[in-house]
Image 1 (cartoon, rainbow, N blue to C red):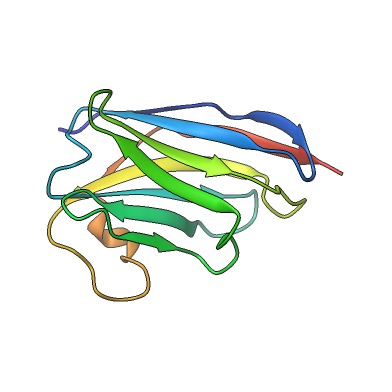
Image 2 (cartoon, rainbow, N blue to C red):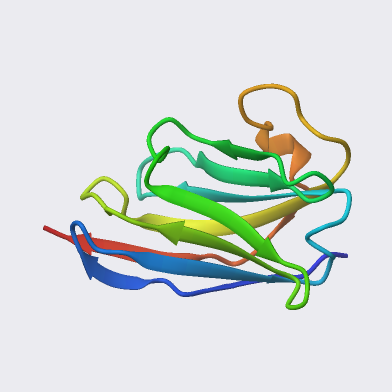
Length: 127
């Protein structure tokens, strides 16, 4: 069982930045997909960013490209989501997710590939 614990959420003004952290019980440089998803009340969960541990290949949703960056730290077995230029449409509960397997060669790994999920951290953006 993989344990994932998110932190770093909070409230920020539009245009501001936040960095989310996901402490994982697996090596983020190993053969795992690590990702971030988000969900707002009344909306479906949507993909945000992902990284394949073994190669560092990254994936981003179009809505966050150029603003968000996913990265990982082997020493801390932590995956980060740096969020810059936050917009009023970014507020949501952000979830860290992980799944064993190979590299995905499409636009974004489907959520079914992420078997393990954290409890989420809330992000609020004020205009």
